[in-house]
Image (tube, rainbow, N blue to C red; front, side, top):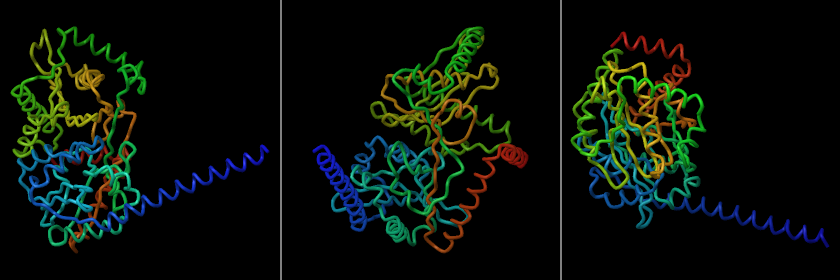
Length: 411
């Protein structure tokens, strides 16, 4: 009798497994059929897509850098030609890829809007399409993208894409790709700051914090500030530009924030705010006592949903540099975000010691490299070779330091 019951249970389990496998196959088939039925259009303006764009960006897992306000601030500053791609299935928008055309050495390259200053790119995808992304026929998608961009660009280069972001596969992950030389680093924020620190070397970090606090108190103390007024925020951003310019000059490196367009873009982000979300918010460590009112360190944060990204930071190297004010500011910022609906603090792209010390999560990024024209084939090959070369160098600290020294000497 017991054996019969076991046989019946096994049959039921087999039936459930077969049903689940059938559902999975149907979903994949549904996604492929949906992709085959996609109507893909290119737009040279953002405004006609605003309503559906803002609807898609409400998805917590879509990147801040593809949000409407972020892209609008960039477009207002740079005014490059746009080729925004929308995919629709019936009357439903499946995805939007916000793309601009950048001309480099005579080659037209289609890139995410603001790619040079973005830390993570996901595109905008509907929930229904995202759920079936594993069933996307990548060869068919590549052919559709090729047809859409034909005559308008030479190379589709979509950079800094995680193949999977917080458990969700990216619909672009099956396209021709190369791994980007830069990785990103994140710190999950848990219920309390103490629990968050437990992911790290909490004892060592607390000891260092106490030492930094004593040094700061010895010169009169400090205030952690998040200015409320727009004028104060813009003033701190201008201070960042001055500090960063001096830092780049001391290293013999080009100032990536020097051009008027980039400055206008970042100033434009400060006034982009929607509830708890903000395009850019400046935070700073202001000294008391011996250095009354002086700013020792500052950072610019962005927030979308439960994801906060540190876009940049700088310190005044003429003030208390031995206390590591930049790292002390990170402590203040991360501690202050607890209890405010933030689940992830993102240190952004680039491998630096302080990021590794704070971030237990490392995310690989990839670049979609899809040639559209003959010259695009050569440009795509060049991008792959250069990217792999950079990755090879960065993976070897001695070689990387040598390369940095050469770069500094060449100016």
